Amino acid sequence: MLSQPVHDVRFLYDLRAPMRDGVRLSTDVYLPAGGGRFPAILLRTPYESTRDQHIDWAVWWARRGYAAVVQDCRGKFESEGQFYAYRDDGPDGADTLRWLAEQPWCNGNIGMSGRSYGGIVQWQAAAQGDIPLTAMAPQVIMGDYFGEYHRIGGAVQWALTALAAVTFASAVALTQRGCAQIFGNQRFYRHLPLITADEALIGRPIPYFRDWLQHSLYDDYWAALDTHRAIARIGVPVCQQGAWYDPYTEAMFRLYNGVREQGATDLARAAQKIVIVPWTHHIPEGSRLGDLDFGPSACVDLNHEDLRWFDHWLKGVDTGLMEEPPIKIFVMGANRWRYEHEWPLARTAFTPYYLHSGGRANTLYGDGMLSPEPPGAEPADRFSYDPADPVPTLGGNHSLWSLIKFAAEPVYPGPIDQRPIERRDDVLCYTSAPLEQDLEVTGPVELILYAATSARDTDFTAKLVDVHPNGYAIHIAEGIIRARHRSGLDRLDVPEPGEVAHYRIELASTSNLFRRGHRLRLEVSSSNFPRFDRNLNTGEHIATGTRMEVARQTVLHSTDYPSHLLLPLIPA
Image (spheres, rainbow, N blue to C red):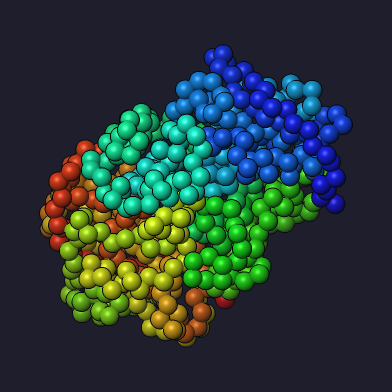
């Protein structure tokens, strides 16, 4: 039986955990009343340890027989030192774990838990190597801070980068409504140059924000933070939780595969779990997200999932968890859970769906088609991308809801009808015939695109859409590539105006059953704002550029240039 909420709780406020450089971090501890030694679960946060959500979390665990430990990160709220995002989280986490192991109320079995930045601190601590950590449970987070976080496809994940920097720099915890009042007007996102957006918003520079923008290639700055480079030092069981409409799901699978293949111990390589829910970056609130209701089975109690994990590893309770296959995913469309053994699935048939048109794929009313048949001699499609009038973010695989949920111009993630976007002339739409039978797409999705631009640099975006029989065009997965980074994020490959270039655009991984009678649609454009920054098309440095030019874009689909969507199809 899982641990039950039978304990009263006592509170140890503002203990001071010493770090190796003498800085002391404020640490609150919630314990079962009555004394004794207990397994501990550590949550480290830059968002204030005494927020209601952290207190609720800690009391929930303490009532079930755990020492729940919540710590303010260095330089945040009641902790000493200076906060600089990500830099100190590994050493500070390791020092905190060693301090925990010595406390009279800790029995030596220690876990780590947390979402988003609370997941970052787990991976950073685990990568320190020889530490007293038994198991961890990071949620909705990545490993590569450049290509999987701040610079997806080379484009700046702009709204998140700006909001995260300001939130981290705040002296008080910002509520959702407070964030909405600050960020609700999208004029802020249009500020140029990007590197002074911090001063425009809060009146002072934020050092790490400026470093993020100035380091515009994957270099030593980013490599020093990259969990993938430290994967061979991860030596503990890990249970990750992700979401199909979060931006980091495929990144989490890369971490999962990395530890299984290269982890520091046999136990770590064998004891990896991952659960993907039909939700987004914040804690699930029900079965309805965006324009879809995924049914009652979609409702998930993440604390219950973590309780099965930590009861097994920290208390030795047989929860049955480790007898289950390691991957648990929710198949959207079918609206059911399924266990799997590997990622991508071994039975995947990666299948090209080719772009076709008579040269007028613009808007959902155009002649763009998508089919498994290769193209022949077909005219190219053209559109103009004006950074002064970018395609707006509408739904999607992002984490903005938790920060601007109440904004006057809200940016919601998730499966939202894309028809308002698809009526724009700068959005190409390629749509399949109605499906004659159900078609499951589960796994990584990629667009191989042949395109030319009139600009010195530009972006190309891709979006996979499920078109329902009633016309609803429901967002499934999206991606972006910056032209100058098409050969790799550690180098520049500036396109020549008019040159036909080969682009590979990684869309968010997904699991969706396209039902019989539905159609698949691919959108191709050059902006998705403010999720991503606007490419100004001039080739200037992204941090300091201010000039804008209109880019004339050409998308080719022919025998010589067979642009296609590569879909991970799962046999029925």
